[in-house]
Image (cartoon, rainbow, N blue to C red):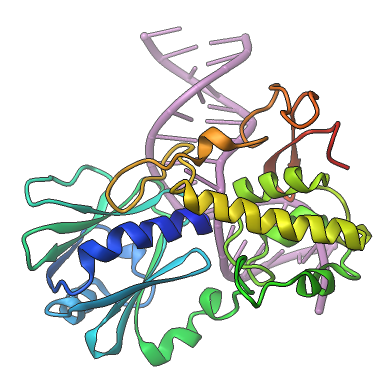
Amino acid sequence: MPELPEVETIRRTLAPLLEHRTITRVEVLLPRLLKNTAAPDFCQRLAGRRIVALARRGKYLLLNFDQSLVLVVHLRMTGRLYHVTEETEPDRFTRIIFYLDNGHKLFYADVRTLGTIFLVNQDELNGLPGLASLGPEPLTSAFTPAYLQQLLAGRRGKIKAVLLNQHYIAGLGNIYIDESLHEAGLDPERPAATLTAAEIQRLYNAINAVIAAGIADGGTTFRDYRDGTGHSGSHQRHLGVYGREGEICAECGGMIARKVVAGRGSYYCPHCQH
DNA sequence: CGCTCGGCCTGTGCGC
DNA sequence: TGCGCACAGGCCGAGC
């Protein structure tokens, strides 16, 4: 579900509402979401802790508390983390309620309950497998054309499969990959190693541009995604191919198609992506 | 090691 | 209207 731009938007919208606030109490309505703690321990350790800062790494949201405590949230497909005022009641998808010292609340909701939540100390962050092994992020100095070139060299898998792997590049998901490949003019099934230097540069530029646009638009609300205040993003209005099977490609006038690549529904324009 | 596929969960939307 | 099926923005682990 949420990819880098969505998680970043959640972080930005929640930060001013949560930073410097103290958690007074926690209610866990679905304990199996907690992957490394039992619910009573989870509640006890968070009660009385003050939120210092919100951070993000890939699709992980990190709530940093005083006393070096870190709440690590991965929303997976349908997780939502959002701030509500006192009078808002939980619904049947609300899984965890964090009560704040100003009477407001933070809800973790999740329809498919695939989300994962860890509570660790700072020095234990490297012990979280998915988090510790993330690759470089788009729009940072660690992500360069040379890195992308070396990543793709000799790799026999499809370009889309490579881009989905969080160990290689952190934060990309199905929507932004399809959009990046469209902008770069590349078929999602192209074997990674066959990209020319010029195509790698185009893909590099496209990934950064697409991720930056997604963040600027506050994310893409295709179905479930909402930001930290419950609002939809607007990037769905600027998608070139994703979810647009049978529609006309604005680049070339061809008809947008869909095929399964790397196990994922993939949208592309057969006329301008090769 | 590199890669593909099934499983985890529940809801929605489509065709019949 | 009801039923069955495909599909959904992610990730991990089994198996080839």
